[in-house]
Amino acid sequence: MVGQRMEGRRRWIAGAIVAAGLAAFVVVPFAGGSSAAVVGPSPIPNACQLQSPQPEAPLKLNAVSVGKLAKAVAMQKEVFNCFDAQSKLATIRDQETFIEIVERSSDGEKSWDKKKHRWHAQSPSLRTVATSVQSATCVKDLVSGRVSCGSQALPLGTTDTPLSKCTTTSGTYPFATITQPSHPVEMSTVVIEKKWVKTIKVEKEVFSCSGQIGDLYLFTELIEPVKGDSIGSPTTLFAGVMCFKDEARGQLVSCKAFTPGR
Image 1 (tube, rainbow, N blue to C red):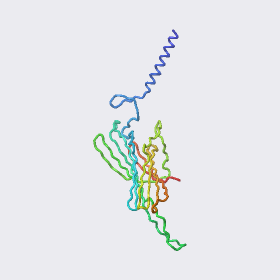
Image 2: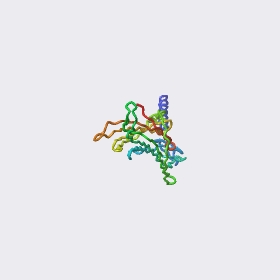
Image 3: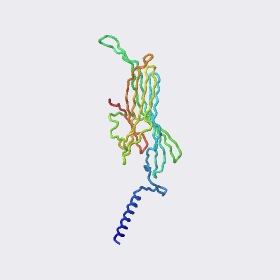
Image 4: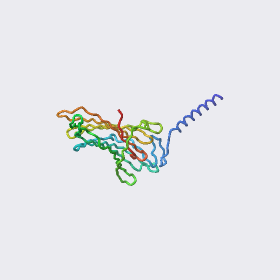
């Protein structure tokens, strides 16, 4: 009799454990009254989150020369889903970042050499004269059926520590690794006044920076002089731009330029 009671108690405990395990399986009721297991991040009311998956090749770069000027434009695209107060998808925000770098060719100015009493011609050069950032956003309103677009220029600040307070993992538990672009590198080449061959490459990496999305753009330039029927040895230049986005608003907030250390 005692043995039967012990066996019954063991079966009851085992059943309770199984029931507790089933109860621990996360089930969340939807607004319509039905329920389903949570597979991914839940929509957030009155806010945006990155669409998943993102465009396969969101980074582009091209370059062009006009007279003594050479311009390179890097463009990056991200898509955000934005929800209303009932966590229903209301709008889709297509946010694009344009980074433009303008350089100018110089023939080399002459300077007076006081010791030799003659003019000295400096070597021709190619230098950056302007760097700018433009944000373009198109909003697809699923409620009204309208599409609206706008753009604005962002002031470009400077920094020596572009990765301050940034990590390669998300800022919320379980701290998953940040998803990186599937095509993170673009490159283009242009000829300037038949004197220079300029090759510019941009690569992008994404970070989580104090609750914001941090987009790190690194530019590498190879500047080669044209000498008769040959091309001289390249000079390598490096530059960087760090941009920050507010994911909840699906909006580009600020950008800062920096020069990578050597």
